Structure formats: structure tokens, C-alpha cells
Amino acid sequence: MTYEEQKKWLYKNSRLPSPLITGFSVTNNTHGLPAATINESLISKNYGSFTGKYIVISLNLINAQNAVQRILKPRLSEVLIGRSSVDYDTLIYQIPKSYKLESVPEGKSLSTIFGDYSCTVSVKDNQVTYIRKFSIKQGRFKPSEYKNLYEYILAISKADNIKLIMTKKT
Image (tube, rainbow, N blue to C red; front, side, top):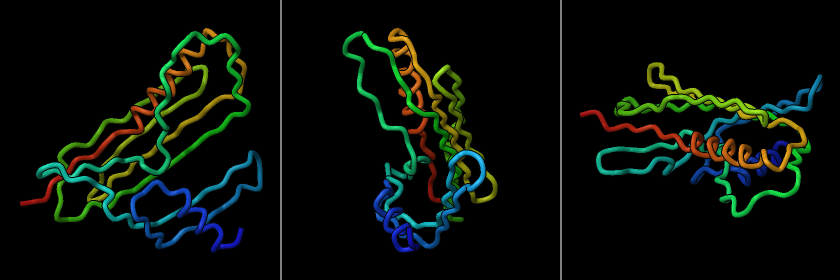
């Protein structure tokens, strides 16, 4: 893709409100497993929501796991995951000097036969760094394992919904 096509793709696939891309680069891994790294700097207006004196920021609007439908009846066929994949995201938030952090969420870690998930949140000076790793393993699984897969994806969806809370300094 050309630079402009890549930029259009980034805008099209962004979940952020009113994104303004200020710079980006895409690097393809030419050795080993297929992989690409996207480094993107952007500004998003209306990213946080105001609740009284608090500003609430979702730490992962970029690559959050969608919620899953409830299990309505027992699964009869095998679960087939056709290929393995790994998502690794690092998001850095610059907190304005006129704000202070009120609540910083804790990280989470999960490990199952279907894959692994972890997220961490760290604070240094006026920056909050959110790191997320999510893997799915290729395989065939018994119908009885479907409930465990469902619970794994549901737990990730909940973990991806963590929020940072801050207030204006007085």
C-alpha cells in the first residue's frame, strides 16, 4: 500500500472518536512469522467522558476484544481455531499537567489452553503506559471445551474495558 492508502486504512479502522493522525509508520517483519508493527501518533478529541468532577478514560479503545454472545445451548461440534495469532499493543497516554490521577487500574493475566492474555498499567511522570498481549492458539477442541473458550473471551472483554480516572488539579 502507498502511504496515503495506509493512512486511509488507519482512519477507517480506528475506533477512536475524532482521530487526527499526526504521524505513523508501518514495518513488516520479513524474517520468521508474518508480522507488522504500526507506530502511530494521534490526537483524539472527546476521548474521555466527564462524570461530575471526574474524567474517565478507557485505556483500550484501539484493540479491545468485543463482547461475546451468551451461550444459549450446549455445543455439539468441535471448536476449530484455524490459526494462531498474537496481538501486542503498547499505548502511551500523555496526561496534561493540570490533571491528577485519581484511580489507576491494576493489570490482569490469564492463561488457558486457548491462549494467553495480559495487560499492565504503569505511571511515570505525566505518562500512563498500557501494555496488552493477547494470543489465540490454533487447535481442535472438544465441544465440552466451548464453555471455557467463551469464559476466556468474556474475561478478556471485561479486562479490556479498564478505565483511568483523573481530576483537574485545584
